[in-house]
Image (cartoon, rainbow, N blue to C red; front, side, top):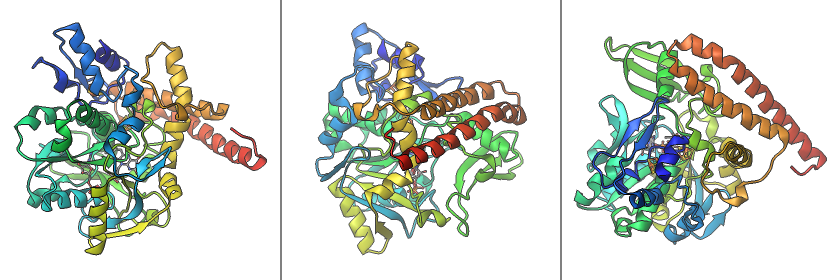
Length: 447
Ligand SMILES: Cc1cc2nc3c(=O)[nH]c(=O)nc-3n(C[C@H](O)[C@H](O)[C@H](O)COP(=O)(O)OP(=O)(O)OC[C@H]3O[C@@H](n4cnc5c(N)ncnc54)[C@H](O)[C@@H]3O)c2cc1C
Ligand code: SF4
Ligand code: SF4
C-alpha cells in the first residue's frame, strides 16, 4: 500500500497521477485538513496498489532508473549541455515577452510560449492552470482568443487528475504547464504509456520554490483586510515603477465586491521561512524543473530584479524550445539576453541552499523518525555544518507550526502572535549561518 504510505507520511503533492492508474471510479483527490489536495485511492487488489506507485513523483519504490537524471536522458534527447544542479539544457536567457509581460506574473514567457505552440499548430490544446469559478485549477484551452486567461502564477494547490480522464477522448496534441513534481509525474506516465509521448509533445516547467496550502491564500486575504468570503485572488500585482520584489496580493470580497490588497513586503519573507508549505517539498531536489522542455522562473538577479515590470529566467532544454525562443527574438516578440549558468543559479540561490544543501539533514532526521523517504540523488546528500542544520530544524518547525496554528481558526492576530517567536529565531539563526558561511570561506574551511 505504498500510495497510502506516501499520503500518510505527508509526501503527496496532489498531482493526481495515481488516480488515473486506479480501476475504481471512487478513487479521487480530496482536501486534507492542512489545506492540500491528496490522493484517496480505492484498491481492488493488492497488486494493483503496487502499480499505482510507479507514476508517483514521490514513489517509495526506489527505482533509480526512474529518477530525474534517467528520465531527462530519455526525454530531453536534443539537449547538449549538462549541469549537476539545473540538469540538461541548451541555452540560458533572462528577459520578457513584449506582448504578455504586462498581464503576466513575471516576464510573460509562459503565456508567450503557449500562444506560439497553439498558433503554429505544434499542439491543439493547452492544459494549464487558470481561474475556475473564482478559484484556481487545471483546465483545457484550445483557442488563442482565450490566451490571456492562462497568465499569472497561482500559489494554490491544483491537480492534474482530470487530465488523464479526458486525454483519450481528446483529438490532437496537448501542451501542459507544471511545477517540477507534476512534470515528473507526466514524464513517468509517458515512460509507462509511450503513446502519451506523441500526445503530449511539450511541457512548460514552472520553477517552483514550494507548494503552498490553500490556507496561505486565506492568510493573504485576511492580511489584506478581507475577512469574509473572497474571489479571484491575485498573487502578483506588479508595480512597474518599482523593483520586482515590490508587489501586492489582492482579492475581491465576494458580497460587497470591494477590492482589497496588501504589500507583500509588509508580510515578511513568505518563501524562505517555509510558511504554509507542503512537507513533501522538503524532500524535492529538482529546483530547476529539470524534465520540462523549457523551464521558467523569476529573474531574481541584477539588473532584472530592479525592474518591477518583471523578467523571467529561461532554461531551454529541447530543440523546439530553442526554435520558439529564436523565432520570438527574430520577430522582436521576445526581448532576451543570454546569461551565464552562474546567474541562473544565483537567481534561485535560496532554493538551491534549502533544497540541496539542507536535504541531507532533513532526510536523515526523517529516516531516524521512521519516515520512509523516496531515494534522493546522492550528489545532493552532503553533510553541512551545524548552523545550517539548525536552520533546517527551525525552518521545519516553522513550517509545521504555521499549518497547525492556522487550523485553530482563531484569527489572524492569534496566528501572527504565535508565529512570531519561530520567525524571530529562524531569522537570527539564518543570519548567523550566513555570517559563519562567509567566514569559513574567507579562512578556507571546507564545509
Ligand atoms: C507554486 C509556485 C512556486 C514558484 N516558486 C518560484 C521560485 O521559487 N522561483 C522562481 O523563480 N519562480 C517561481 N515560480 C514561478 C514564477 O512565479 C512564474 O510563474 C514564472 O516565472 C512564470 O512567469 P510568467 O510571467 O512567464 O508566467 P505567465 O505568463 O504569467 O503564466 C503563468 C503560467 O503559470 C502556470 N501556473 C500558474 N499557477 C500554476 C500552478 N500552481 N502550478 C502549475 N502551473 C501554474 C499557468 O498555467 C501559466 O502557464 C513559482 C510558481 C508557482 C506556481
Ligand atoms: S501520484 Fe501524485 S497524487 Fe498520487 S500519491 Fe503521488 S503525489 Fe499524491
Ligand atoms: S518544491 Fe518540488 S515537490 Fe514541492 S511543489 Fe515544487 S516541485 Fe513539487
